[in-house]
Length: 79
Image 1 (cartoon, rainbow, N blue to C red):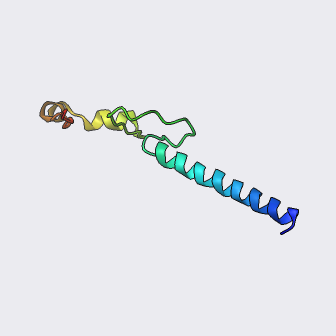
Image 2: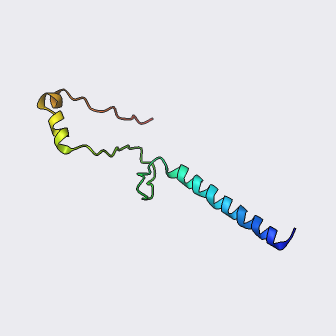
Image 3: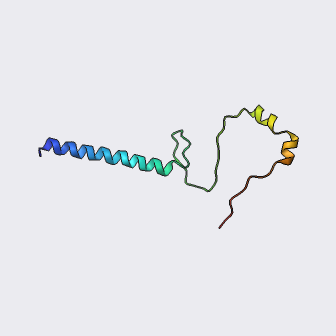
């Protein structure tokens, strides 16, 4: 095998390693990734949801009667 072929094999193996490593990093960070390119934070046990709701629509929905009858969200229990 010539030096040109060996070099191509080494370059191809390096590309495969970088791509595979990139997928591995994405899988680790995908749970908290906001999709905006920011680094993922460690799992703190909390959750959050980003919405694009119009604040006026939210205020209209949460009437005094709905607020009075609202129930707290279930919280995780410590083991």
